Image (cartoon, rainbow, N blue to C red; front, top):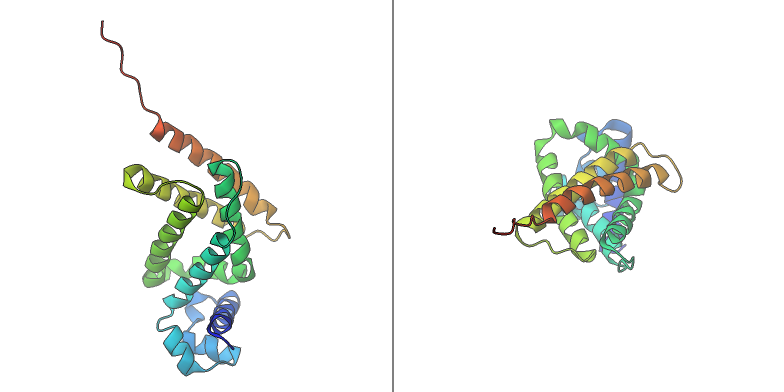
Length: 194
């Protein structure tokens, strides 16, 4: 088993435990044990439980970034990239729902998830052709985090085979964000001197 397969097996085991018993029941040792994997190698590859979240986020981002977004405008590219990320997370949906329920009682995981989500949204913005530098870039990243969070609420309850509920929520959230960003980018004109 190579490193990638090992990591995927640990992640799948961890989120299966979370789905059945909650995120607080997850440990790297237990995930390795239940997957029939070596705990000593799991300790090396996942030194902390939050490493499971980091690695899952990284794998989801790789799935998103492995194929260039080809839609004609930024909004459509963002939609495509974010849906790809949700699709990559779909096998872990029930465990992710449990994680989100337990986050208020796990500040270290909540903080790590916030940091990694911010990083991921920056990558997605750049892949869609949007710069992330400067104040406007920071605001766009924060806006995309809001879009992601709104669509995530739909995702964890979406049992449709094609993520149609998630797509509808994402579409609506992107429309709202586009209006806000449009207002931010609008440069007011000064009245002409008399």
